[in-house]
Each structure stands twice: as structure tokens, then as C-alpha cells.
Length: 177
Image (cartoon, rainbow, N blue to C red; front, side, top):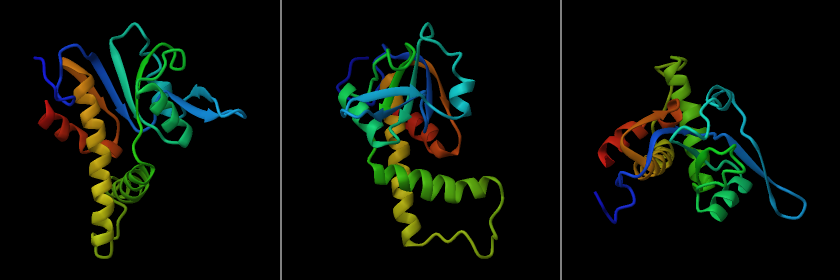
């Protein structure tokens, strides 16, 4: 189904997609301003490292540092397979403030506690104007993932969305697909 809409599937995408905040690679600047890649941190990277380059898969992740954002910018978001162990990795260069508000101010400061039932319900959380502004960043963050997944997915692709940081992605992706 040819289309000019980059958020609609073209049928040529990957059969398996993984969406997570952290990816399988992270970058740092060297002394000369160049980029050096290293294996990404966290248990998800370890757990899914068995997905190798022979699998028709794309890992969609966020650029978490200035060096990550520069790598995503230089590569057009699809990272060099030499840096990723041959895996296809699509790194989203999301605005740092949006990423911070979505990840720290909503996902880790609100949703984590809600999922673990750790609020003093009569007192917190408070959903005032400041929260709503940060929630808009959370929606924007999740929308960037949903759009990238829709653009990368083959017809009938399996899409694995990691954890509560991306809790809005499945509904957004269904709407796009």
C-alpha cells in the first residue's frame, strides 16, 4: 500500500519490533568530538541480546544523551550496524526536555508509584496544571515511538513495547495502523 504518510506501513518493514526507552547501544563523545559506541545498559539489553542480526527486527529506542542525539542526527536515526552488533536500531532524537518530563516526571515519579500502589491516595498524586503540562510531554514522547514503529513495521509485525514508560504506545500504534 504505497503512501506518502511516513507513519503508515509500507509492507517493507521489519517483522519484529521492540520499543524501549533504553537501547542496545549508547554513545559518548571522545576527546576529538567523535562518537564512540558501547553496549547499552540495563536488564532489557541483556535479556534481548539473543535477538541477532539474522532476525528481521528493529529496536526503536530513545536518544538519552547529547552524544546519543548526535548519533541519531548523523545517522538519520537508523544507526550504523557496526555500532549495534549488526542489529537494526532506530534511535529517536526526542527533545531533551520532553524526554526528561516523560521519563522522570511522569513515568518514574507517577506511573511507577501507581503501578506499585504506593500513593497515599487521599493526598497524592495531584493532577494540577504542572502535571498536565508534563503529561503532554509524556504523550508526545509516546507518540514519537508509535509513529516510528508504524513506519518501521511490516504488515502483521509483532511489536513488543517495554514497560510503563511507553504505556500509551499500543493504543497510538493501533490508531496509526
